[in-house]
Length: 125
Image 1: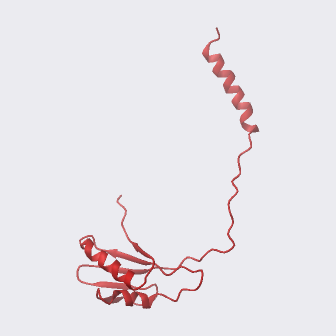
Image 2 (image 1 turned 180 degrees about the vertical axis):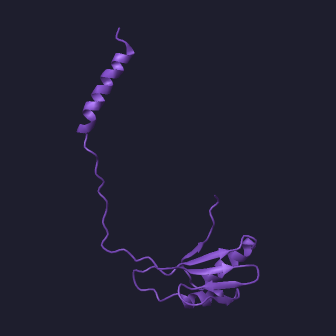
Image 3 (image 1 turned 30 degrees about the vertical axis):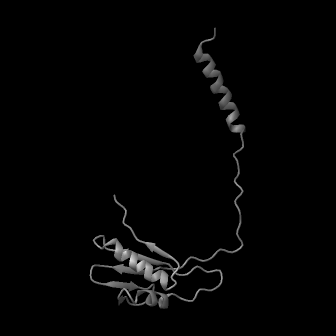
């Protein structure tokens, strides 16, 4: 009967000899002729307890009401050309704001035809 350590040493030598002979596998990635450019900066909506503020990518912030928020944001978005994504809207709400208020803002944006809406969060460390 052969001791177990001898078998393990023989297997180790076999693996050490054959490992350099194995060629690494290559991944063949797909190619794209033209990708849509990413928008420079999103339009930010800051929702606090007493106001809704629109911060466009360029220009001064604008204070708005819930009823005017959809058309105001839609007017700030540049015209979308073929193959381009519309400018995203980033909603940043105070954590003391009712979730219902955020949903109403999202609903008004959706009614105005704003397609890309995101919610800002803060990571816990």
